[in-house]
Image (cartoon, rainbow, N blue to C red):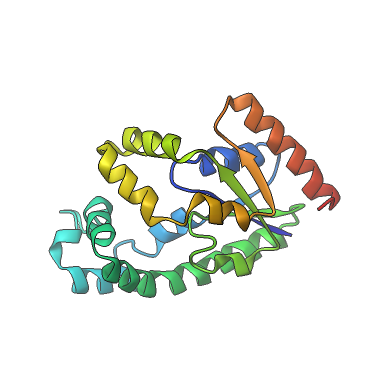
Length: 199
């Protein structure tokens, strides 16, 4: 079984994924895969550099993710173009990683993806798990984590699927707005359910 784990920016997806990993559950992180497909030498990076020019490259030839993010959040058409270049490559590589983990015999595996619903990656999973926090907390965490101002953090949150829509599409939800112990208890409960097939 493949569980799709998602949530808005700064909801704590990676923290929750690592809590499952501590219980022996492997995961594929779509963000890691997204970085893999734009490494130097990859076709996607060449296309992105040709389209946006040197302003999106660092001196060492790697993608300047912050510069690119500023462009695509200001210009929705550019975001759609970028997604048309990267999403098919990301999806194919995710499928390869998931197949490898399934072959290794885990009770179930996680696909951790901030764009699970938006990119149709939900079609790759059997069940969806949303990590939920209030928007105000997302904005505060994003501003602190990424060292940006509140206005930019609000724009990033606003550009994502709404909290209400994400929750409406969830099979399961973990509330990650409280203490870590609470999150770990929720992970333990769901881990038991997933292992037992109590869905």
